[in-house]
Length: 210
Ligand SMILES: Cc1cc2nc3c(=O)[nH]c(=O)nc-3n(C[C@H](O)[C@H](O)[C@H](O)COP(=O)(O)O)c2cc1C
Image 1 (cartoon, rainbow, N blue to C red):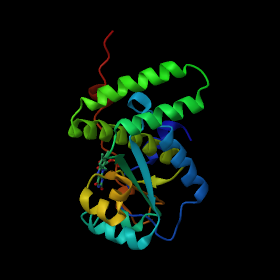
Image 2: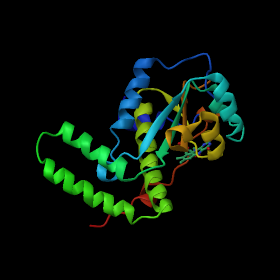
Image 3: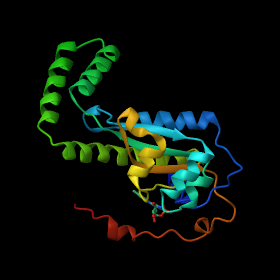
Image 4: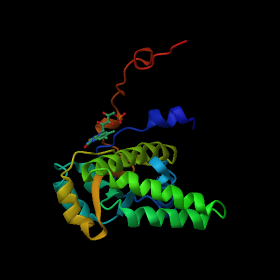
């Protein structure tokens, strides 16, 4: 299928067929796509928590204003940000870079120091906002990849973050939930699948300067 056809096929799925499970192979591809998302400085201040547990999904639904897609999904992908983007985190990134790149280790160390200084001068809120932007970037990537893989999904910011953090005990891993992405196969009676997509006319949303 052409990429545009895939993007037209996808829609924010409000109800999944809860008898259908997405196979592990596809989940692995989706996880790999998450990891391949570009991030600012390449620091990846994000983590994907994959939930496949109906009991937890029921609790998460209550923390998501009762949105049915959370409990009927095959899996709920929870896009989290790292709470501690600190010296230790940046040093771990430099170490990983050196392991994967045989050359230029002095430059990698020097760049690591620049990043440590840069992040030390940011407030906790600035760093949180920066990390959250990276999570949205990953969400965009996952929406497209899921569409290509013929996996339905619903991007969601309609939930109470603190409650999701508590249900999944994310604090133990120094994470905060910022976005949910329930995935699965659309239910036959999901009326959202049948309504026309609403988008601005192309010549209104794109301006070309010659
Ligand atoms: C960041 C973000 C958050 C969203 N949050 C929700 C949500 O909490 N619940 C929901 O049903 N849809 C949510 N949506 C889906 C949008 O309403 C939907 O993508 C938009 O109306 C366009 O429709 P389409 O995705 O079907 O083309 C969200 C979308 C985005 C990108």
